[in-house]
Length: 429
Image (cartoon, rainbow, N blue to C red; front, side, top):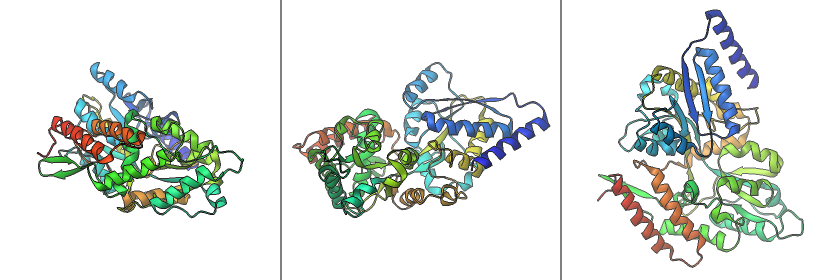
């Protein structure tokens, strides 16, 4: 893989040398990435420049990205392209900072897997982004702990509960201390983590956030499946089977508890494979499909998309850059195989790219199978962000109180959601 990247770069450099000076055109690209995945993006932009002569000026941050975008919009100094989460589409559309995309203008658009396009559409059915990466969620489990305790891989929620209980109470690390817990859970309200995490269990229970009807959406949390999902997760909290501080934890807080050996089960995406191979170690962990709930196996499907920003004067260059991101060459560079860095492209959205052939790691195949068979994107409401935030507040409240009336709390959340949908002119009355 690294050799292939080098070959791409050298070929591009020779092309530029043969044609004279590089193009004076510069494309401004912002991305919501960690420093680790930003290194992969830099390799991508360098390869793109070598191939086309178009310079790329990039900026990335993983913390206050939304605030910086808002400031740039206010100053009328937006970049040309933004690489951001799929779920950000509604918020960015509401801000008026992204332009509609004509897929036919993007070379290679027909190579994108059809399911990925679902994340690129607004509530009006129009396309506002181009997917460049997909992902779904699966379980990282301490295999060494599980095998030491003689327990099977969890296939159901009951299995998962028993495993979490054993990891908490049966000294799986053998140090003679009661210092381990079952699951790492990010239940914070920050950025809507509690809702983001619980969506996996709500869909596995057979529940939904909303139901789509003629004229819009209706809140649908006040139901037995959703109550079952919240009840199951709350039992883990109230029995002390999650890490201390889980109720206020983000994924940034939850990840170290699994890496350090404090917890033994971590539901997350494939982007954590590399760091977990380092600690606690590849030989100690296994990747398993999410266990089935009452409604079957289900997992949150997410991804990363490229957005063309309002007012860009480099539309053609932006379309060329996005075409490169979704090309087989761009996808493989974005996967970062062999670099040890967090990939920009988790699961390729280009159907000609074989994840097994590139990764040579069956764990990535597990994530792809979950995405293909059990992935659920968030509902296509006009703006999912405020709904994720208000449901996170409600779910966090339920998980924090062992005696609260779950159906009553869900009814209250539905009322808040109805008000938000009405504000978005998306409530089916």
